[in-house]
Image (cartoon, rainbow, N blue to C red):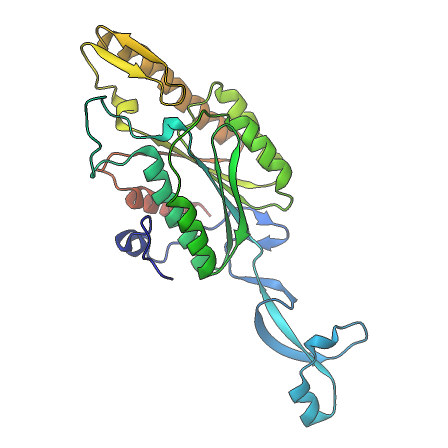
Length: 309
């Protein structure tokens, strides 16, 4: 596949190598993540001939064989797995780069949305390479863009173009978005959520994720955090601005807010981790720090996942 895209780095593709994203669950009767199905139809790869039977579609008759044998035979094909994967990417304002008001954006520091786009691009490339179908949903307080799952190199260009066009904006309503999407996705598949999950209520988010599981989807959650959200390095007089609403808070000594902020973040991470574990959802925390590149974190996760299966 062509890798000349902003979010498809050759080093990431090389690092991921032959790792596969194998779904744990059986999806609509097929073993997800494996390329071949034990069922046969008329979709992908030729297997053999069989004698024509009344009711078979005439278009599948092999006329070359008929010319040689004077008998009707139809072609049998082996289907690809029908695993449909959905990449759900949060592009709300909170996914932007966290920095001081007077600090210029640094080229070697990734914002959460950038990190999420790199991650989504790698996952899309990986799944399309293993001949699965991949779709993309971008959202903030609702679904903004829905690209249905398809496969093939042309579809990769569609996904990459969308990722390259997004920018962080708007507020977040994860639970409402997921509930809307769950109604739209009929067949069981693989749901991959990429978000910072800075939502009002972790329990509402978990309830929405639980609904995906109730519908028999496999679910993976990538929780993207900025180093500042993990360490809270601020001190002295600091103005904090809500990246979604624009509201500002003046703190004369930011250190006084540190303990409360970190406790809230720990509560969020703990609630998501425990809730996901209870519902057999993979929860993966990722830090946008450049000391741990996204492809390294993804490679480690996929390796662990493969060993579990």
